Image (cartoon, rainbow over all chains, first blue to last red; front, side, top):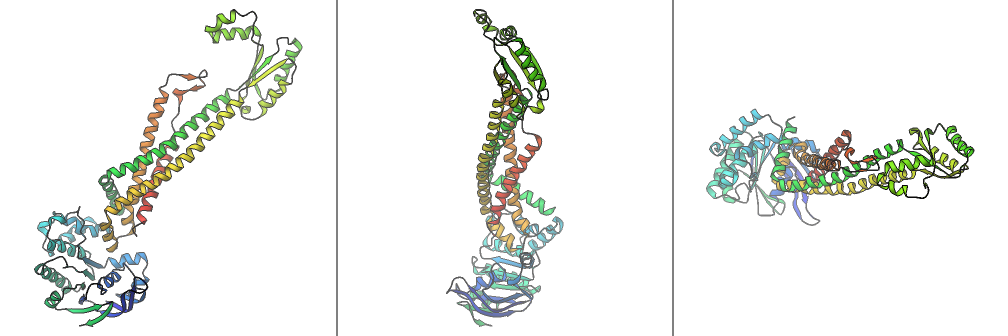
Length: 219
Length: 296
């Protein structure tokens, strides 16, 4: 699914965010990316989201070299990728329902299938009773569940999460991780960047540890 | 169609959300287009006036008090030979000229009666053919008449028409220059206002980019928002200009015996008004487009 070969990302002449990173993540894997701040976890996710391209090496997802995609191909690629951020990135002026429906709406989906799918994912994350609430009326855990629902609405083949439990207490963190496990159980590849070693221990999945842009452990 | 509806919904919602800033952009465009259209209205009305004056152009040939019968016939023959330029001619004796003066200026009639002698010269009043009123044939005829014995002066109002024509040209040029500067300012204002709206929705745009939304969905609402601001600004400018024209039309006075009648002031031709609206929308569209390109 994900094939990184000697990927390097350089932000200025001397500081490498990623250095000669080589790894493979199979389709349907659940992978934790961990390491201290500045290890390169978020940079790798940004490369996978095709927000940036590597300075060196090749990064392929489902056989596509992400550096060689045209603008339209990037759009098409991103439609198959769901993402979840630490700060949720929900739109405050929209209700829970509108936040989730926003994705199919801006992708030009018809209103009937859009509503059906929105209710489906809303039910799946257990927030149908809060569908008319605004993000600021929700708890952190609820906001993150809305963000996960939004990431799933497009039936992605790959879900990327950058510190999704960074703003949550341990119980809520585990609850959110269980949602990711359920997503993965349906065959979706999940990559979660976190520095929470305790959470990784509790979930117990494939873990890649980065430090200074290099892989120091892959277990 | 779905994309267009999305863009319209988002653009109108954004206009309403940022109505203060949007109003500023609309007013800037309205001022720019009001100035530009105002100059166009003034210059087009001057052109109409010039055309009317051209049609009514007359040549007055003043004769010496001691002109002989032969000399008067000679002047008349010069006019008759130039019938390609001269549409009609009328001889006014000194007595006829005095009568006309008393008729046109009754308040001064008694003053004229008090004079020891009739000061008005005899003349030929010549009406020119419209086809020749704009070329130099009348000027040549005037020069020829000045050389004719018994003629003391020839008055031809072409100079006034030429001067007015220059004023109309200058007016149009000023309109283009001033309007151009104001339109550029309007583009900058629209760009800033749309950029403000864009900044307020940066998280939304980020999400749209990350989910792979087509560029039309991301940029479209902002371009349309600018276009709507431009259209509304142009509409406002035309409404203000129409009001100004109505005010001018309501003025009672006329200048030079009906030749410059303010009540006949014309508004922009429909095609030109449509062009102003299109231009306004284009100005807004360019502003919106420049702003929408920024975050990518």
